[in-house]
Length: 324
Image (cartoon, rainbow, N blue to C red; front, side):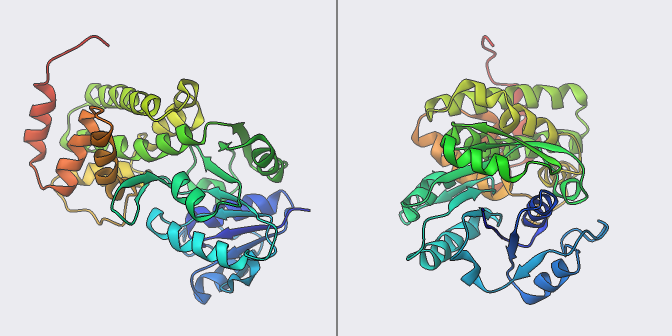
């Protein structure tokens, strides 16, 4: 029998745990603090206050639960993944290695400050473990409430089959994929494109502009993914076009809401959207590989370099037109 642990008692970690519980899987949530654990034990998620209570979840703040885990879902913000990997390595040092499923969508930096995908960091820190990317179009509140969603688990066949089977009978339909690089990169990049789409909406540029950003943004994802060795089919699946469409659908998406606030001239919290913390590393990674990503670079200029949004839009429109 598999023994599941979800690191992270926030919205997405709680949603994943709720689906595993619906599939009658033994699952424990490793929460950051006792208040979060206590709320989950009553069937409530602290980060989803508007959601009705579900069946109580087993939750703890004691990371000894990692030692016996066979599958570990790391559902914490991107910048907290490194600490989670270290905890897994320490607690599983003398245990059979669990499958580690990466649930965050973003780019990290190594000790030299160079950008890398979460998959690379996980493989470096957890060389004994099978690493899987768990991604796709899904809002945490809907999953926590039991509404259906389709996601993708990317990695080697044996590991992804175990994860797929774990959700059998739940509200999540999980597809398997071997392209972990493509799934990870698409998940990181779609957040940045959603910020750009939100800016267009906030500025009142209309649906035509939003459609253009989504289309050309998808082209950026595909172009960069190809250079990084991803498969083209991945970008047109759940982790690519599927997640991009959902994330750009409206203010239910934190990244879209972040961009809309910027477009209205407001100063949104940097905690609102993962894409705001990913875009600098993504732009640096693209520059290193000499890949032109005009939308990604525009968001980086806006978020990290204080450039004027109207001038950025004018600059994008003034770019020479090419073949599609």
